[in-house]
Every structure is written in structure tokens, then in C-alpha cells.
Length: 590
Image (cartoon, rainbow, N blue to C red; front, side, top):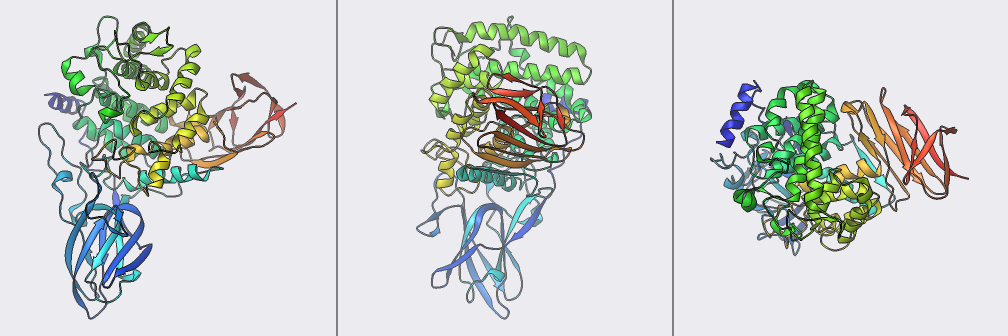
């Protein structure tokens, strides 16, 4: 019934069904390395995992029956035929005729090509004429006539047609951090194969939470905006079950507006978007309540459940209400921009009333922390990271909660890590956020790299999610976090009309990069030695607010060599006047 009502709302709004997917295409990729691992058996390495299949061409005048093993993992220098979890392995046979290219693909997998049912949406399919696609890095081939060489084999890899590898760049003084960014950037590209943000290969369907994280990182690594929109419309037709996933639809719409400035697109979806608020579950003071069904399944908090840091679910819980408050705030902004004055006033009033109730119900002065729920004594990481990330914590309490979260560390999944790190970067704990991204142990992106990952994983490790995918872009948060906070570039007004440049250097000596926007790329280059120096290139018509680090030795700020009016706000120098074009800003001492 819920899905039927959603469909009726879309029809009433005259929103046409979305395209099957944003346009994608196949790209021929040569092998990086070919090795004969035993007589007549060749191991081919394509360097990174991609979704695709093979084109094989036997030498002229030959004919052969080959066996091909596709895999994401190796074991003892051979394609792993029994990989852990849902790490991919498939094999197939093919007959080759000399000089005639042959597409070789594994058989159809019912898990990710299903038509759906009453509870689950259909899988997002790739074009039938492409044959079956599978994520793989290595292939092992036996039976090939003669010695397999590069001209005999190509991977036909699927990517978003609009993707441009040079749309974004990032580099810093920390080579490990640079590798994390490239891993995350490529993860967004590689998982664009379906034209819709799917949750890896296991199901090939979109989920709202996954889609929002994909969207953020896609915006910071490429110029395309259509794939996010197609995914949004798809999810309006086929919503999924978690409580907070409905809230993420509002996050997605707001992100589109901020990054494109397109009010027409937003206006066409506004009425349907209002249905994603949790107002029907709110009690008199505005707090959202959860019934037994919500507690049993709907209220997600984090996924998998063991990543919740002991969170105690209850009828009035902190995480669900944090999401509710954030969506009220964003809906008020969007309603006002679209001229829905009554809605905007109502949402603002609901936000103010509910925030008062939220603080009274969940904040514990004795501990200085938020507890998991009403009448619950436990304070988890999640009960504090979401209020901090969503700006719900009063200013005087933010530093203490950020410090507590920083000390607790990565006691959450790769999904919640997006919000944990946002809260740390925004509240004076940027150095610790960077440490967590590259930390030793098995709960960081360093672990993925050390494990040989070329696309981010669904979870930190198989010990936390035994059926994890090795091709899951919701784990690619550094693709957006590093340009947003290390380069410091974020939109202040819809469509990047005005921006904030606020680098968080942590322990880095320098960083530079290119951030794609609808108005053109923003280029940032900063370094620090005796002074902090920022070189900035803004697109035509874009103005920027500049906030730079202010240490105890700094005394003033110059812009293009001239002393500028600036004021100290906490640990920042904030320029009084916005800047345009190409500027060089320096924080200098006495």
C-alpha cells in the first residue's frame, strides 16, 4: 500500500517515469599484465576492478575452446574460486574462431537481475546487447591457442558516458591520503556502470542512504548531475524500508538544489518530497515516536546492526529524531525558496519546538552527551555523531562532543562514517578526522588499500559483514570529504553562486585540487610553512567567503599582497569582504 500511494502521488504531480538510467557506455580497456602461471594457463590483471566482460580474439587460422575465470580476488596468485562473502567469482566457456572477436561473459545471476516482488524493487538492468557484466580485476584463461598477448584481449568496462576523469583532482603532502582519495574517486566512476546509484553488485538496486552518499561524492568528482536525479526519481517510485532512508530523499533534493540551483526540478517534486517527512509519527511536542515495527526493522541507526556501538532502540530515540529535525530545517529552506510561505513557516515552527524537546529529552548535563533515547541511560557514538553533524548541538557543547567522538574513534560503519567525519571536520577536530581516515587497524580506508581494494567496500571488513560487497560506493566518503574540508570548498548559495573556502589542514603541509561545479571548476592550492598561503581560482560570477586557520602567531591577513579587513572567529581568520576571480591570500605573523 505504501508503494502504491507513492506511485499515485507521482502520477498526480505529472512527474513522468524516470529514464531507465543515465546514459552509460562500454570502454575497451587493455590488460595491465599477462602472466603464464602454468603451461597454457594465463593470469590477466586489468589493474583495477570494473564492471564488464571480455572481448577475446584468437590468432588467425586457429580454433579453440577456452575456459575463463573472472574474479575480484586472488589466492596464491590464482583467481580465487571460493572468495569470501559475496566477493565475485564466475567462470564460463567459449569457442573462439581465429581472427573473429568474441564477447565472453559469465551467465546471468538471478540475485542481481530479478524482476522484484511486492516487497523489493526490480534490479536495475544493463543493456541486454552488452551481455552479462560482472565486477572483476583478474581473469584466468586456459585453452587459448598459443601465447595470450595484449592484442588478443580487452575488458569491455561499463561507465557513465558523461564521466570525465579530469573533472576533479586532489593531492596533498600525505601520499596515503592521496591514495584514499583516488580509491574513492574511482569507486564512484566504476559503480556508475548501471546509470543509477546501485548498492554494489549483490542486489543492483538503489537505497536512499547509499544514493545520498553516492550523490555527494559524485558531485565532487565529476560534472554530471543527471545520474543523481535519475536515482532520485527511481527511488520515488520504489522506496525502501528504513526510517532514515525516507529522510535521505530530502537530503538528496536539497543537495541537488544547492549544487545546481535548479528550482524548476525541485518544484516538480516538492509535493512528493513533503511525504517523506515523519510528521505522521510526531507527538504533541514534535518528537517522532517509533512503534514495535519501527524498532524491530524500520529504525536503522546504522548497518549492519553490530555497527551501532550498542545503541539501544526505543519508542522515542535520538537518531530518528535527529534526522527528523534535519529534514524539517531543509524542507523549510526549500519551501521558502519555492514560495510556499505557509509550509516554510510551519516547518520552521516545528523545528524550533521539536529542537527544544530534543534537547530536554536526550541531552544529559551530567555526562555532557546525548543518550540513545528517552529514559535510556546508554550514550552511543551514533546518538552524538548525528546531532553534531546536523547542527543540533548548542554551540557551547559542540567542542566537547566532538572531542568525545574523536576519542571514541570509528565505532560505526562506512555509512555513518560520512556523518561522523563531517561532525569532526566542522567542529575543530579535523586532524583527528584525517587520522581516522588513514588509521592502522581494520576500520579505515587504509585497511581497504592494504587489502588490495580498488573499489571501496560495503563494510570495513568481512568480520563486520560476512556478505560484504567489494564494490560499494557508499564506502567512498573521502571523495567528497577531502575536497569539502581539506580544500575547503562548499556552496553557500544554490548553484554555487557563492561559496565558502574554509580549509581544514590538520597535520598536512599542503593540499591542492580542482572541484567541479555547475559554474566551472574551483581551483584551490594552499601550503603552510612560516605562514598559511592560499591561491584560489574561482569561476566567473562566483564569490567566496574566505576562512583560514589562525594560530597564536598570526596577526593579519593579506589579499593579493594588500592588508585585508579580517576578524578572528575562534580558530579562524574570516575575511570581511567576499573575493572573486584569482586571489592569493596569506595569514601572516607580527
